[in-house]
Image (cartoon, rainbow, N blue to C red; front, side, top):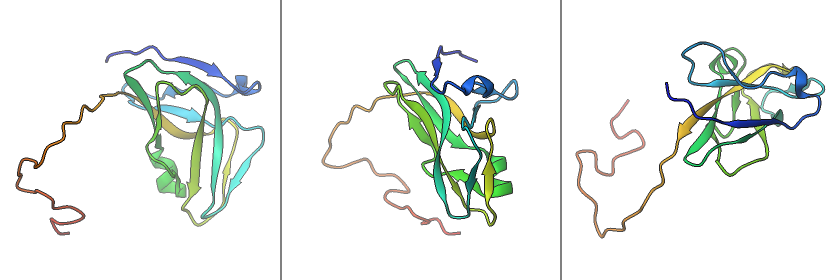
Length: 150
């Protein structure tokens, strides 16, 4: 696998006890992100909250970080991210926050150091648009939104 150097900074003075993002298995594509909070947060059904990770990144040009939900939290508790995937651009230097929502039926308690999301580092391609009067025709053409049936 290719490696890209990402600079990271702890922005929470108490964050020394919260792990930095980490791959949980040898072939994981996503790094787990941890809650960097001073006290438990209760996320009630239907409620959304911004949860701190306590970190900021310096991502090199040509890359982005995508923030994605954790499947186990979604399946077992109905916890997911509202803006999934979230994008961390190469020029953003602020703290990474997670917009969590509880789609479950019970309150969910977020504890300090809990794994809440995963981050995938991706190569970015810039678009160079070329305006045309018409586009090439395909078998699908403009079909969308369930046009192939159930």
